Length: 216
Image 1: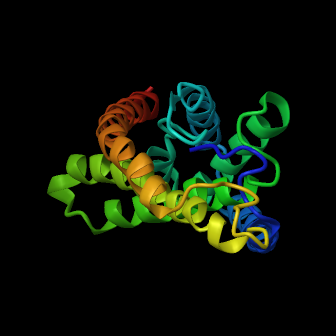
Image 2 (image 1 turned 180 degrees about the vertical axis):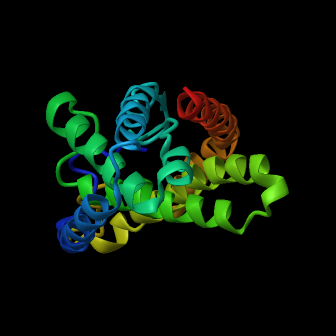
């Protein structure tokens, strides 16, 4: 879902930069206030794992891609703000150092995959009854991937309406909703199953390791 430069019109990415900047500022304060020394190694390790996993991408029509993000698992284990800031850091590094995702599209990537992905995943997990926690973690992984795909599909599909020349030719991303919605939602609905399964495996592993280190 990493969108490259040249796909999003400035009429969209400039306001999104303003919104993202405000959320990054607030998120930095929240993480600085709430993060404890015991959680820092876990957060760093899982952020690194998310960074590595997101490089394994399935190309999709139109120049985008499908890949797992690990945002759902980060949100379940550390909360939505920690997950959002960790994911944003990953997106910044990938865009600036590896060319994976654009600089102009960074706020859309961060807001969709990082913020909305984390908030939705955490919300699903929190409303799941205690006895169904495994199901809650799985659904958190799935929704944390699928809902951002929906938002990005809508953002891309809106580009021909937002920016076009006098003849109606799109200036940026050329495909409308009829292409972007199925092209992104179908593969991400399926890939979300894998994301959910990986979230469950990661959650169980971290919980077991936490218990072991707590007892040592």
